[in-house]
Length: 178
Image (tube, rainbow, N blue to C red; front, side, top):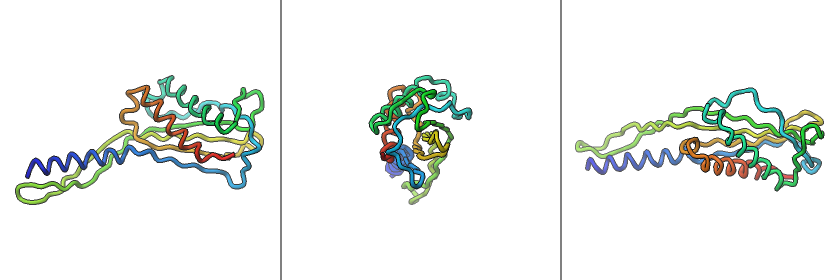
């Protein structure tokens, strides 16, 4: 009976941790924006705000993977990358943040005296990535995409980081329509 309760607790914790790992993605589009008039874009200057995690801030591959994923995605939407001095139609900017999250839930398990509830605490780093597109003529935000996901297993693997960034950008840009 005790082994069954322990197994249920472990299984519940695994499910809770897996639930934390599902990427949440969303987009915002400025009302009345006609994306068909945008043909070119350039990267805006880097964000002065820190991401909040040295593992990303000092990782040149993070920036490379992110910019590559955005550039491939915008190319699929027929937007051309030009130097900032060429007067692009859109400026693309991104920012990110990392925070530690604690999820607490009750897990029921069997004991010799009956059923008890134990609290299960799962902590993980959660990353938020935001990509903005600003109309260079009006200086107004016309599109924003964001993705929120657990960073567990991502920060220690460059391949996994590249895969997750690609996934995040593809899902965000699915909401970008020209």
